Image (tube, rainbow, N blue to C red; front, side, top):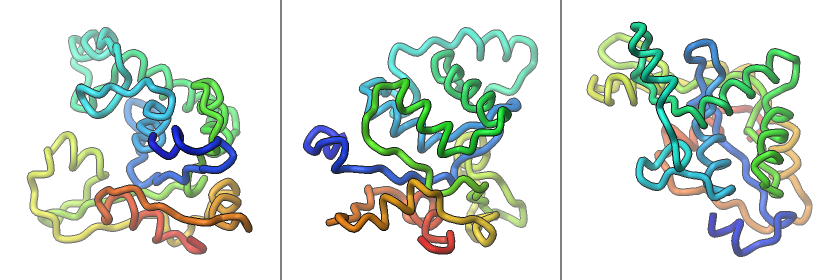
Length: 195
């Protein structure tokens, strides 16, 4: 957010981790892309640290009353993003194209690019079980002891065009890696060939 406020949109690009991405309730959910999008547009929920401000939970409450899974907190406003992303992906757009459309709708003028259009998923191995990262982190509350972290699909993934343009730009003067967990937010990106 500070970089966005200090620099012109043409002078700062954001290349984003996709290792946390997963499918839930038939929808494509991209937590890191969404958190960045909400932050840059001034719509992030500062109380929770995730999701959108002014969120309501009508869908989740109704879904839960029918016996649906409610461990991943999908607010109504957040849900609209997941549904739109899923619709556009099913229409044949890639993740970078979908992200560009969503970012524009949120009024963000910076380049925001997923590191890849291919599926790369952070998997947590704990007690001989393998979990999607969100299932381990949110549903299991990070309780089982981790024995290893894997980046499923990274061996076949390639860097997205937007990420390549941002990281390979001849006028590039710095790459800033935002503070985060290196195993969960940084290594999934570095595991992709060419990054």
